[in-house]
Figure 1: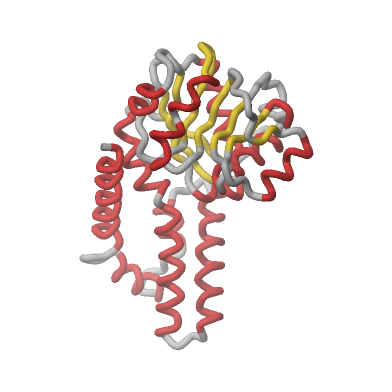
Figure 2: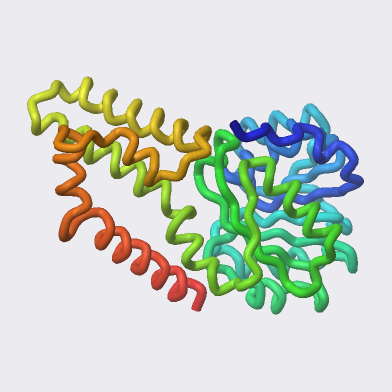
Length: 278
């Protein structure tokens, strides 16, 4: 089994840390940072319409919408990408020569950010996914040439608050990353949805079909997460020759099945990511 992450990795962070955008992903990150030892008084949140749960953190010392900009050790941008042209330039006053900027905005490139921030800013672009809400996400990150080894470690610690972190050196891969893991939860949810519908078509009561599909997908995902075996081996282990699973897989893995469909789906999502990035 995989070892749990160290819950105190941010206890020694000197701050201050500025979170820009406290939606579901932003708040998941903030909750993770606090759980990992970040002192609330070292953090501030900028959000024009913060949720009640975010407002409640002010009682612990988290600053909300500070009136005066101050230099931050790290800035995490978690706003919707369409708001970036207005939001990013306004952060310049909080960027010092040693400030690390981490963006989790889909489609917004390192160059886009660099053009709107002070020259020489250390920037990391990252793509998490929605299981981050329960600390089980996976994030892929890429940094620009200004990111030092120390800043890269800080970025990894900040992103690890919502799950596993992987790095790439070629930013062009981020569109494919978005297509596979960023959009991936929707594919899994579609699988559960479609399995339930097929179960109803086979005669199962709708509530039972939905529960069977949900628990099967969730349980199989957890088994895959804990196992040292790869997905193909796990599939083969539950497939008896000539059995019911083999009959179903003959359809799913046949012409027009999962493999060509997913290749087309990932390619379409990758291309759309490139288009959104301009």
